[in-house]
Image 1: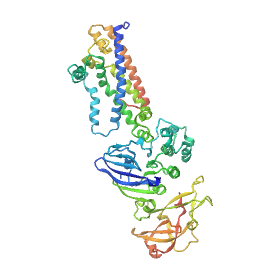
Image 2: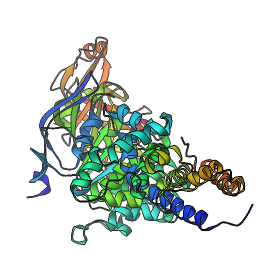
Image 3: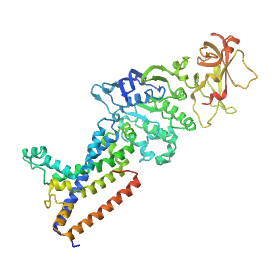
Length: 228
Length: 362
């Protein structure tokens, strides 16, 4: 296995940025969804639950295909952006970021839902009666009581985004510095019979994935937060 | 506006599931302790949650004094209502210490509105020594006292207690009761308390809201509600009544005098450290007998001269005789119908009420 070249470093940079941004966005986005799923008595709960879980069962190509249509120049979103004088989102970093957020949504929502369900409504109602507004309650009660859930959700989201391949290939292709993430680069190397380069990157991801999961399951035991 | 004039206006229809509906349209008095009394599932807790704003229904109207808590499109969320809430159990924030729990609301209360402060509240509830403990190091009774203290420290305009003693064992209940009584008197915060225990209601309440099947049946003062022979407060344990009076400090053979000389009782002391003076005794009618003459050679220590006011013999074998004491309080005695005939008991007749001392345990 040789040292990492500039193409590898570029892919690592894209991958890490993608994983970080996805994780940050999902922590913000998944919090209200998970809270609602944990405590709502609405009839639509099952519908939302199913939609959130879709990426777990859909082939990544299906998700990627629909995103390509929606975000591309003729799609609803991509087309509207073009009309506003902006670029459409297919084959761009922003495009695969949106894809990653959707693709990893269940991995953020489910541990948080579980954590919020464990807290119950009571501490929040109590904090409310003691004069704490919504943000205050989140900061001083919900977050400290579900910290374990957040750690698990963030780690799983990060790791799952790292393992993303099909969606990115469909929507982003393999543009160096823009959409060529590690998994895509490994595919390219293997296609080009460059097994040695593919191997060093693959091993790197394998080791990282193992330690991530190891950390998550250790934390699960400590915090008692179940997962996906 | 004085605190005595405060009313809570509630009009709401709340559907829970397919077979339960809470429908209220009332003006509730809020001064002293108001008990929400009724069987489980009659909507007491739902009504409390409506008042707190934890259940939100459309077209409801909730006004407290001159404040609008909910009307038309307006909805004041709980954190702006300044309501102290105490639940059955598990309501302390587990990631905070006792001190942090107590101060959570205190710190969020605007300085100008703070009437109650930590030193007096912790002393009132006897939790001074617990301040640095973790929540899981507290017993059930201690937790409830901390919860009460925490609710008081927001200097609430209204305190809502949802069966604060239901999850406690009998001993702990007995220990907590004096704290609740003292709190109700000293804090001067109006309290609405959910309860299905006639004992609790008798000890603490000033007025009672009777609920049944999601409706408010009637609102009575405690005294009036106990004067009715068919009071729902008798449902579970038979007829009972309340005597109110001063508890004297003298201690003779473990007994303390209670009430004025013309209606003096001797009450066994169960807690020597209890120096409360004004108190209530809740007595079961079945622990009271009647005699036409003063008894000399008898184990019963407490005899009060009374005048019979009314006899309710709807019970078949037994009759409940309502009598007035010298100081105008009502005593109920449950005697057999046979005794009523033999002693020729009738309204206006003078008699002696004999009360077993053990029935006077506070």
